[in-house]
Image (tube, rainbow, N blue to C red; front, side):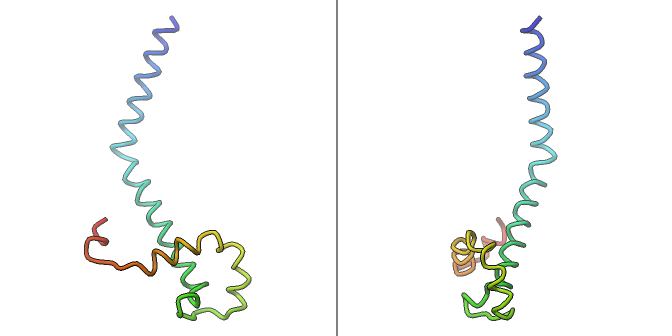
Amino acid sequence: MSAQKNKWQNFWEGVKSVLYGMAGHDMARFALKTRGSMEHLFILVTMGDLLGIPILPPYYSLRLLPYVVPQIATWKRRMLRERDLTDALA
């Protein structure tokens, strides 16, 4: 009985994985990409003076600095890298 139950569990897990791949995977990737873009935009607005783009007064930037510090290195790398037409396709 246990082997039969295990077969059905494996079958349903496979069906769920296929359905997720067909319907949900693209939406999940798009949501993560959008979230990353919004985070980088937020950091640009608050810490833009690190790149020479002063947008907010330094007081507010300093208040938000402890929350932004872990992401600054990757943000600077992403903002300063060269971009071309193929980046818009990805």
